[in-house]
Amino acid sequence: MKFSGKAVFELSKELPPEARGLIESVVEYLNRDYLKRGCGKDPSQGAEVVEWGFSGRELWMVFRCGKRVRIDDAVLRTRKVLSEKLGRELRVGVRGVRLVDCSIELDTEIRVSLRLPFVKSVERVDGKTVIRLGGLELGDLKKPVFVRLLRLIEEKEARAKWGGKAEHWQLLKESGRKKLTPPPEDPNRILEEAGWIRRLSIGQYLYTPPFTRILNALRRAFIEEVVKPLGFVEAVFPKMYPLRVGLKTGHLKGVINSMLFASLPKSYNIEEFEELIDYMYVMDDLPPEELQKYLRPPSYFLCFAQCEPFYWFFENEVLDDDSLPIKWYDASGPSFRWEAGGLHGVERVIEFHRIEVVWLGKPQQVIEIRNQLLQRYEHLMDRVLDMEWRWAWVTPWFYEQSGVAEEKLELDIDRPGTIDFEAYLPHRGPREDRKSWLEIGNISIHGTKFTEPFRIRHNKGETLWTGCSGFGSERWAIAFIAQHGFDPKNWPEQFLKYFEEEPMPKSVRGVTYPKTQRGKELLQWLEKLFARGS
Ligand code: ATP
Ligand code: ZN
Ligand code: MG
Image 1 (spheres, rainbow, N blue to C red):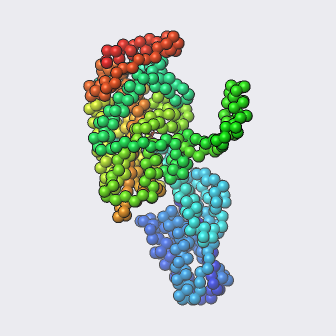
Image 2 (cartoon, rainbow, N blue to C red; image 1 turned 120 degrees about the horizontal axis):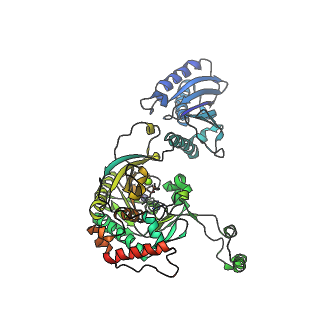
């Protein structure tokens, strides 16, 4: 990222011709020292005055800047030096400053909306982008919108350099091969055809009691083996959040394309709905476009990451050592995601169920808790569920500083980032194929990603971090069955303990259900296996 632009400083009176020498020395000082401060080892990341002149009551300078000393910063620094020097030596004051012909040059092609304030034009040529900004006054340079605009551009450039790769994947640990007893085909298909689960709408299922029993056993195993031994306690989080919360967490900016939204009715007075109700009476239909006329614009998004309310709860709170760390989990409801064409069985759905573990503390505490959780997760995966798993350090691009993306990254899992837990799905193919693995959960430490925007503070000014981990019940169930099959005889003892806490509920078997002959046979087969197992 490079900037260039011409700044015009308005002076309180005309400069005498002999001021030239003084300004020359100011420019020399700026270029050698003051505009290079904070540019690291690379002077081209700093700023430079490349041309200057004066006439009447105006002094102009053309700047070239790298991304470490941006043009707004360079102009403000220069104004400070000029005010001091011209004031002291010539009794000339610096009144105002305008930035004309300012442009930002990027080595990548990005788009920026022309509807943004300050943006005059955007040109993309030969893999580069030049963004020209309208005339800017001193006040504009100091404004948060201008600084945010620059941050947006910087972020877009970083994302473009990251090259569409959503994340960077590095193997951390793996269980090694295990003896598996996979079912005859994709468990999602068996479950659906035998009628243990039934699709209500795209990406949304009803789980009948037998499948619910499996889900619940896994959830109990997770809570008893991982969460509770570490002292996490249960809380109940809401599942629909005001837009403001998503702006602060960054989810609205990052993943708005996969979020679901909710609207309130325009009126509580049922009489105002009369026309619509009459229409439904007669037509037995409710066209969504008609319904929309009776609703307010969406003001909520549905639970996406499930930890959002945790950060909101502590917004503006000041915590002390006695209150830290805070360790909660929420198991109270579904999360929603629009997955478009990616839907598959119950492993990738629009409405799914997850136990979300969240914690808040000082950096060392947050890292330590993450490490303890990892140990317990390993215990769950190996000792209780006996699964074939692997862990990967995945760094979403936004955790990387721009520019670092192409360089080789040192693996340091104590910095903010995410570890994905993946399980092998034998029905998908050989282990070597990445597509044969399913992400079943993950664990993250966020650094100050949430404590900063929500202003969660420590009374002695110490830094606070957060962490979270999601246990996606459906994904664990599918992975477990994909590896151990439907016959409880092949399931590990340690897990049967949880499974057998509940009796086997009856499956639905009616004249018209399950739907197909093959489904009826599959159900019979399942019932036999589970009758033996219980
Ligand atoms: P993927 O890369 O597979 O889409 P993700 O990275 O979007 O997963 P996260 O945002 O990390 O998933 O969500 C945490 C956990 O929630 C996942 O590990 C998974 O167990 C579960 N999960 C996420 N999306 C879905 C979904 N659409 N259906 C079922 N479970 C899901
Ligand atoms: Zn989370
Ligand atoms: Mg992921």
